[in-house]
Image 1: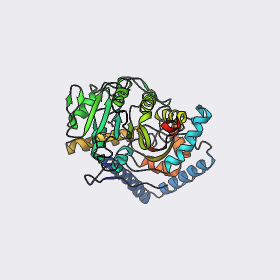
Image 2: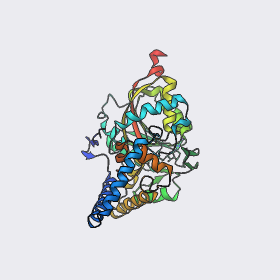
Image 3: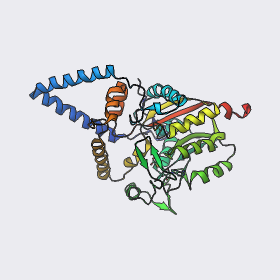
Image 4: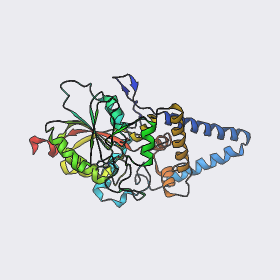
Length: 372
Ligand SMILES: C[S@@+](CC[C@H](N)C(=O)[O-])C[C@H]1O[C@@H](n2cnc3c(N)ncnc32)[C@H](O)[C@@H]1O
């Protein structure tokens, strides 16, 4: 299972993904491993105990029957709750996604791989749907050297977001008036102008309002413009499907679609499944990696404060303990008994969520104007 190299920005010669937090996290893991090794050295009985546990785990993995029924993101929902067609789509998707692991963020990885901006491609659109305080849009522009359009209500989700059968995130969450947003706005040096984040010198334009109202008129003003990069981070199934449907006539062969929450099976993945099915699209997966929202912590200006953000995130990750110590939950055992070894290493190697996926449209199906 190959890990694709992280991208570099040809334009500025800087690495695109600043994954310092994950380096720090791996250091924490190494320190824990060294601590255990030292303890084993002084108390060899521990080594025997760990060996016995490892053998038991291996035997349990051999007899476990739940493989391929759970999604790497949460190992929460049995995909057999879905109809056969969607189940088949998920089963087909997972091995392909697994072969496209990258250490960094699919959005920035893709943006950094777009061709240089030229007069020929100047009409191509780069869209960032769901921008919060604006960093995903600005960093996409930095990585691509191009203008990026960011869409958001700036007043939070327009509908409730049910994540699998696990969590409900309420409508209005992620408003810029939330205390968390205010803290990040302050600490990353963002200012607001009429309730919209400042561009901070980047080639970005923000469009305020619900995408249900703003996206279609925006595209109507650019009827011939192809979408080169489509980043979906509106979170909910409904907004995602609406975004895809509204943009459909602007997709071309070679359009790159990045979904920040793709591995939420009742959200973006479901929306894309229905969309591609309806139009007989052809596509191929290109990367699986980290969600871009964590770059907000990387943009904290004061180095000591940034370090505090890393420590807070790592502490929360340890306390959350989803794959580490919550051994009384089903999710924990589904992960340790059912996940491919490559997934286990991939998921444990990051102090954050790896559920972002990018894909490329390779055939337009019924969206091809010559076939309609
Ligand atoms: C998870 S946040 C985006 C995070 C951002 N991409 C980042 O990396 O920091 C989701 C955003 O989508 C916005 N949103 C959700 N549904 C929307 C819709 N239908 N129209 C406009 N904005 C929407 C919310 O206001 C919120 O700011």
